[in-house]
Image (cartoon, rainbow, N blue to C red):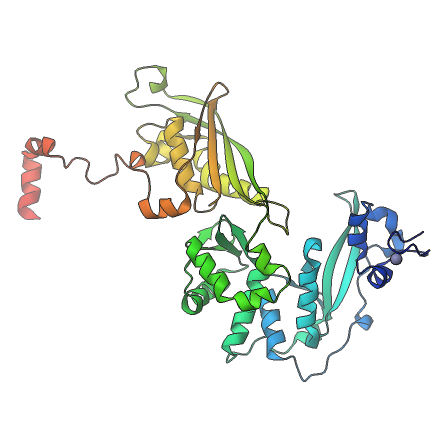
Amino acid sequence: MNCKECGASVAELDTRHLLGCCGLTLQEYALRHALPLDLLLSPDRLGAGIADAELPRMPAAGPNEAAGAVLAGLQLAGRVRKAGSQCHISGEVAWLDLLFWDMAQLAPYGFRFHQAYQYAADAHRVVASNQLAALCGNLSSPCLSAGCLASERRLKYATYLAHAGELHAGYLFMPFDSADEADDTAEYFSRELLAATCRLDAGTPLLRTQTRADAARLLDGLRQELEAMPGVWQRFHPRTPAVAVSKEVVFDSAHFLTDHPAKCSNLHGGRYVLHVTVSDTIDPVTGCVLDYGYLKRVVNKRVVECFDHHTLNYANPELAWRSTTELLSVFIWEQLIDFLPGLSRLTLYETPQSWCQYTGPDLETWQQRGGNPLLTRFTDPALGRSPWRQSLYENPREKERVHYD
Ligand SMILES: [Zn+2]
């Protein structure tokens, strides 16, 4: 076949030829020319990894501290996976330069770039993965010594942020494999960078900066390190288009309206349909505003699990009085805004013919003002303390309480 980049006739195109002629990997070449990888690869090239013999065995002298800091950051980001005798670090095709930056920093560990191809049965096509591979034996020395310098700790956390951090509506979201790692990181950000974070329970440990200002302080505090990494500073300061994305969920619930002068005061049930809309800029690495899977998980956990096959009035005290679509929307907004700071609209259908739309306060306003008083009318301690009720206190129980308290 002929290489579409340099025109040369080659028996089979591979990354080795392409890196030499145009600097692309085979996967990037396939994307540039809109060719399925299946056409470019013979079956014997599928599934093959890189052999141990092709990987360098590094001397025991060990890596320098900066390489250890980058490796520790990648481990914190969950990017380092053990595969038999090798350790692999994977990277996105839209951001290969960051993977090559990783490789340059990790030179003392002897990592090599490798593009692996597999027939993915579920996807019915050949898929590629980009990874760095090194012999596990090269990584035996501790990544980051206990008494390491402040500059190495900064590099570790900047590397973590670059590979795992995501910006949503100006707030930084940071996932972790373990709660301890999340706590240690939160403590470092708070102490060294004066950036407050909070833990969100989204199924896996997740940190979010408390405010937009905390996110800006965190990024500015690590600016020197982040700017040295290809595309990282730009990713956290996006100039990409803003788009609204929505997810639809349904829940089957019963409810009634207290003191309502019509049929809705009777217990009745139905299928509610909820559209959750988030507006934000497109992430240049993922091509998405946010992961629809995350959106679905959060809405299921925070809303659907509370409401589905329940009587709304008894599911939450906020809705005991009147579980109207209007109050439901205000309540649902408060369940989601911490997790979805780009939340821009809720549309809630009680029936196909009746629905309401709601845009509540943004996260910053909600943090300042707290929950909407409409939802706490009957849990408010001030209820029952109005001067109009004082004459009603004149009963034995109240006298007793005042006397003996
Ligand atoms: Zn070529």
